[in-house]
Image (cartoon, rainbow, N blue to C red; front, side, top):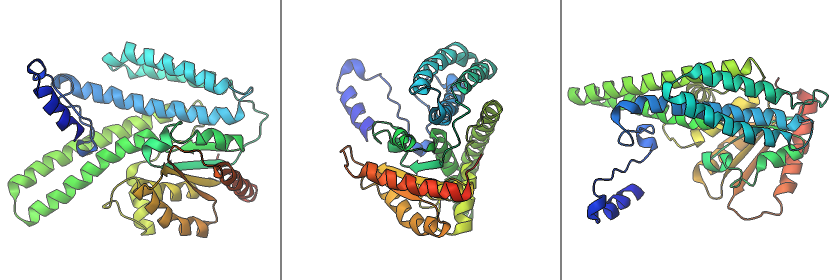
Length: 335
């Protein structure tokens, strides 16, 4: 809607009618068509996806080393510096799609990050975060909940940005399969051919994304035991096994619900659902998952945010972390 209004405004000025507007949307899997020259779209999408995955890895590197840092503040200062180093690396090697040089820089960063860890600090309860992608990922929107959890003794893993990017591609692939089945039932063969073309496009795109994600994580994890990411298809399988929700409904609820179950199966000591106040998908997640995690005897916390300071929030987190420590003492934690 915004880009339509912007188009009207620009067209009202004679000099601006030729200016193109492109909008990135989940409707087409964040296609870049119209944003840059057609011949460069595929290369830019590839390098942009690498940057998203590597950004996720830098986040997971921070969450892995900060709870065990030798001196307070070392990890944050380190990550702030290496983030700008990676920017320079992508500017230098991204245009040539030189992933090896980019990965060499990442290897060096991870090895430097390992030196921040104090090996004498014992392992801490491991907490997983799910929720609405913006609020869970934006430290100001969620009032730095990861740091607050760490302050009370947690090691935290947040859901990745690439999970959502992969989901949009996966969902487009599912939709084209449904459309193909319907068009074949109705004998709309021309429409069926279009769906087959789209289905092959989204399937190949998803295959590439998952392949590159696996490749980058495998190399990063060979240097340090950061938490690996999951495939979206695996989350749908969990929903089918548990019969609790369906991907047909969509929204981040179909990611958050199975992700929570997956965290529990992997031995996490607690899960936090972070979302904007009144967010319907996350409210659905809470309603569906609460009885499940209660049966699994794993601590769970809803953390809605509306930009206001909530005086009871830290008390709730302290209580949650006490429960997580009890779970940790009884069950240990994943490696």
